[in-house]
Image (cartoon, helix red, strand yellow):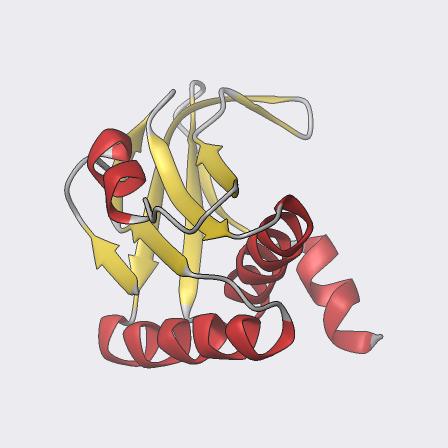
Length: 144
């Protein structure tokens, strides 16, 4: 399941959604809005998302992860709109019979989301300036 939300991410509710009595391993990744980037102090983050395509591609990413790393449950939610420092920007959770599949699937999902989905991040700085952020690690991954 993949979702884009302009509301605060409810991590407790999402954890309940990936519970499965057959699962022995759970891996959760939470990406938070931080107050520093490349030596600049960040005041807020803003995400713009082309939701129809993001939802479609997000579901494809989770389906591909399931083929590569068999698991029982998975969920990913990415925020859109304005976020305050400390807000959860993205949440990925995977439950599986064993930890190895959970770790690998969770890592695959977050990395693929960052590379393939139409989601753009803008940082607002304390000095009043703002700018769109290029994900260098994502760009490098595409050229591999």
